[in-house]
Length: 207
Image (cartoon, rainbow, N blue to C red; front, side):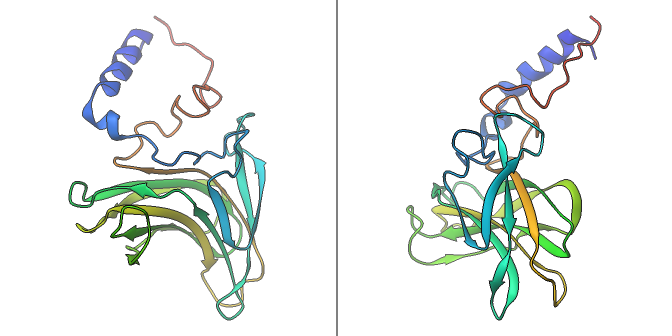
């Protein structure tokens, strides 16, 4: 595909209705600098910033260390502070995704908490999560999660828990967490790092 065709393809995508909704509703899902872990907290375990999953110099990833919870079983949970208003009577579901890696025998989960109020208070529920298993290399999990018609706001969390009994304390890395009204069009999009091309090849095709 030559350069002109690439430009035409990207222009068509940008002006399609699908492209307009394929944007991350999380304000800091990339852990870009200088924000770091702004809008995120770990409710179980501890976290620190480490090298970005795509080696982007102005972005980071989160390294989580598990802690005992629920009878001593090791867990790690990273929770978004952002309350995102979404009307379940208008939108039947959302798309989520994230990069993770860990060599421990644990599940990698993306959970969405649904609220009947617009400010993430009051009664809530969780649909079935999107999940993956052990991966020592960076791996992406993604999928669609349904909303109830009564849903008016959501909050997202990623977490890890053992796949078998007796798993000791473990570490896990998370990065590039996504929540949107449609799947990402480009997982390595130019929108990352406010226009950075750090995940794109510098080679140009022939005209």
